[in-house]
Each structure stands twice: as structure tokens, then as C-alpha cells.
Image 1 (spheres, rainbow, N blue to C red):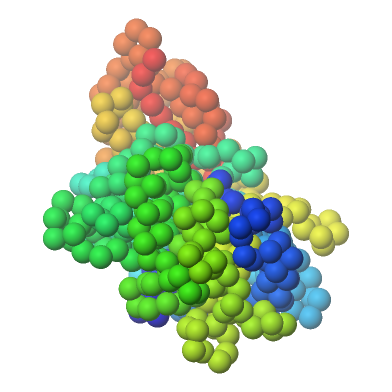
Image 2 (cartoon, rainbow, N blue to C red):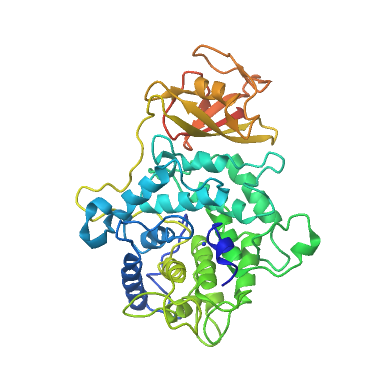
Length: 470
């Protein structure tokens, strides 16, 4: 494996796309035809459907197959349409949503990548990640792991993987109307950290390298290079950016001419190829032509399709394997289908099934969390998850800020609010007062910033951003 399964898959564990590149219209130089790709998608989906358990589940305790949702969506199949034996009551989306809603999920000792993985796959399954249930907001769950001592990192910075997938999840899982829900200041903070961890060879690895000349000089990993370049692109970095071009060059230099595979750290394999192609897809870079068409006329997509058993549809992990492997099949299909690390869910074919599901209102007396950022205009960005328990179906910005003074993780997101009562305009936050045209403004779910007032209505799952400025 590219790295131990417990690290690679459970911690994101080693597995849209904004800007995802559809590989259905290909230049003449490409070697995998649209017909071959269509067949690969059809058979790949059939295999992933065979992985569904009798109770309708893909995810469970320990390592599971929930990444199938990102692959299915990329291939044009809605999770709600995937059922065991045609039993629509056990459709994959409903069963997954129920799992994410349980108080015992993900475990007694969760890590940030648990929530990032779930965010990417819930989104692909057609579940609003911020509104999974009355008590589950996956976006707020990720915010809890913001590192106040190292702004821009999510989870321990030594596990750089957690920050890459925070960027993928928070940018890739848009609102149901297609809006990026987090503010630019947060996007910029993550971009800065990802850039700082780029190795001298143009790629990335899953551990922290920032500030460590020795680590920056070590060889990069194919998998994490694909994920990190995708994280930059979904954060708004163009594919002409120097860091993306360097990553593209790193991958190009790892191509095996005879097969189109990437020579990964742990050898040629489907997962590494899949992650690299998904990174290219997310950046709108065609993995079938130009720099990725080898001197022998092979491409990374050629290699992936050569790894697939047909008509069974599963992908083998190593070229020498004689049977398919679930993770390889997921990573392979997602990449061949043109996906990044998540995808907008397709419109279901099941009669009456909506494209999206999500909690519509607060439930009185039920504790939940809201995602909050506070930007004072000096680069001192604060990010936190605020615990709230309402007595009605909605709440107010004033109530959320009041709660944040004592019930935020990490703490210190909000220390003082003026006025402290009433319904009026906020004139000071954390000791920073309005001054002329520079005032506190609020945005919800990526909306335009407008004057921040205590009586501004806040609904369940809203991602709230406060900013001081003109």
C-alpha cells in the first residue's frame, strides 16, 4: 500500500470537485476513448453497488467503504438510488445519514479527519454536511480542530494530512445552492499553510514539512501531492499558479512511460494513481494529454482502466493482483469518472427523492454546534465551533456570540460583545470598536457581508463569518 491502511484511509485517512474535469470529451491524442471511460464507469458503479451491506450501509466501525459516495457521485449515480435488493427504505444515503447522526459516531476518540472524510462523502451523497441532523453539523465539527497557536492548521500540524483535507472539505462541500460557505480569510489561511509545506521537488507528503529544511528536501508522496494540489485548486488557486505547475511537473516526472502509471513511493498501484488523477481533475488539468501522455502513448487513465476487471468492474490494487480491492476500486472509479475528492450529488432517479436532504430547523432543547469565524482585519483570524441549545426553531447572531464567550471550541473566539443585550447593531467585538466606515459585518453561508446586528436571524447549520472593515 502507499502507506499503512490505518493511516492512509482511516485518517482520511490517506483518500468535487470544484473545477472537476470531465473526461468525456477527449483530444485525439488521448488513448482511453470516451466509450472506454463510459464502460469503465458503468462497470465500476456496478462493483461499488455490490459492496453495499444487506442493511444498506457502506460505513461502519473501523475501516469502511464510505468513500464510495464520492466515486458514485463522480460517476453520475445518486447514493439514494443505491439500495440492497431494491429495498428503498435501506437506501445508502438514508443509512449513512442515520449513522452520522448518532451520538456514538465516529468514536470515543475522534480526530479531525473523521469529520473531513464524512463531510466530503455526505456532500457527495446529497446530505448537507452542516445540517446532517438536529445535533450534527460536520462543518462545525471540523472548526473545533482549528489550531490557535498555528493558525491555518486543522488538527495537530504534524499530521499535515488533516489540513489538506480540511481545505478539501470546507471548500468542496458547498451549500446546496452551490455557494462556498466559508470566508476568504479562512481559505487564505489554509492556502498559506499548504504552500508552506510544499517540498522542494514540487510535491507534498502527509507529514508537516513547514520550517524544516530537512523535511522539505525529502521525496514527496504521489497520493498527497494529488490531494494537496486539489486542496489549493478548490480553495481558489488557479492551475496556472507556480505551486500547481510545480506539482504538475513533479507528477509528470513520476510517469512510467510503458503504462502511464505513477511511480509511487510504495510502488505502482491504483490508489496512488487515482489520487494523482483526482488532483489533476480538481485543478482542471487533463490527465489524458499533453504532459500526461507518455512517449509510449500511455496515460494515467490508461493505467487505471488496465487495472479494472471487466465485466466485474472492480479495480485491483497492484498490477500483479488477481482480485479486486474495495479501496482501489473506489479511488480508481472516482478518478476515471473525472472526479476530485467529492462531487455534487446527481439528481436521483428514485421517484420523489430530493437531490439534497438536511435538517431544516433547530430542535428546541437539543444541543448543536455552529461554525464561526471572527476576522478583526489585522490577520488575527479566530475560528471555532459554538455550542448552542435553542428554545425555538431559529436563534439570533447576538445569542450565538453570547454563547461563544463560554461555549466555543477552541476557546477565545469571542471575549466580549457590545451591546451585550438587545437587538441593535454590534458596535464592538473582542474590544475592537466600529470606526467610521470600518464596522463589524456578518455573512452567513458565504453571503455578502452586511451590517452585523444582534437580531440577525441564524438558522440551524449556518456557517457564520464576522469581519471588521469597510
